[in-house]
Figure 1 (cartoon, rainbow, N blue to C red):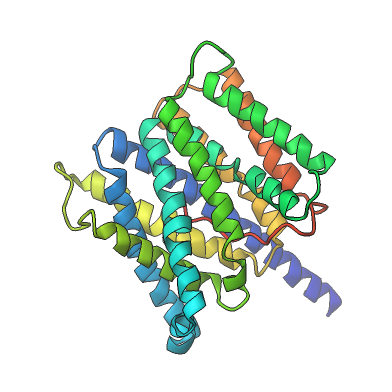
Figure 2 (figure 1 turned 135 degrees about the vertical axis):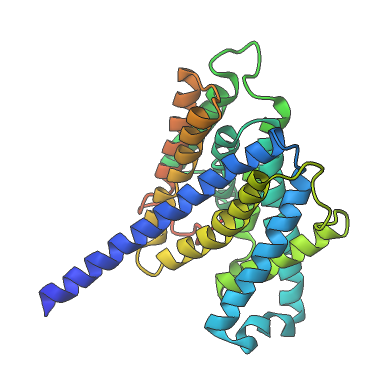
Amino acid sequence: MVTFRLWVLSLNHYKGVAMVLFATVFWGVSGTAAQVLFQQDHVSPYWLVTVRMSVSGFLLLLLALSRFGFGSVFSVWKNRQDVVRLVLLGFFGLLGVQYTYFASIQYGNAATSTLLQYVGPIFITLYVAFRNRRMPRVRELTAIAFALFGVFLLVTNGNTRHFEVAPLAVVWGLLSALTVAFYTLYPQTLLKRYDPAILIGWGMLLGGLGLGLGENPFRMPIHTTPLLWLLVSFVVIFGTLIAFYMYISSLNHISASVASLLACGEPLSAAVIAVTLLHVRMGLPSLLGAVCILITVTLLAHKERVTESPPKIATPR
């Protein structure tokens, strides 16, 4: 009996690991798909984010309804303070993180934009240290140093005379990292009362509908092709809905620390696809910068990280 129980626990652990890896690959591929849509099909990030958030939010709420029921899904609207928090999460968190990320891809490439977004934990670390009125610990200072050095190498490729990546791509990428920090820190009060799938579903739907006021999601791109719709469908279904749900479900089998470490597969998959399929050039200094940023995530996700750090929720990129 004990052996069987251990076997089941081991099987569940590997199931959780597999779910995170699939989620990160889907996130990485969707970033590359977005790069093709922006730079080859001339799709607007504004339009893609509107469609992505509206459709994914709606589908995610349908899944939440089938799992939790009508009362649980709509309970967030019964509390005025929670409604305000949800609206802020939808617009400044979910909408912010997705638009800035896609804007960075539009001016640069998926690999660089994804890596820049992974600087987000540094902002979280600095905020937590400030909130607790203490200096960052040695591990945190080391992570910050790796992150800064990594970003420098990534955007310059070791050449201090010019940027290897368009400055606007860097600005949007760092703004994306900042919104990741907000998105992670802000909804902790809501997470104590509502399931993440419910919060993300409503937040994405609100953000998508808000964008829809300025960009009609039913106005098709000028040149539509079967490949364009295939890429858009992948970004919405696999790169958002399925990836997010798999990541959240994996936390039933593995710890948040393990999941966040495995999530490093996202920029790796984005880099591999960008280099092999889109022929994005990444010199040795840029690759070293990518490694430094991933070391940052590893240091901050270590099981001995600060206890006051907030729990993580998945970022539908």
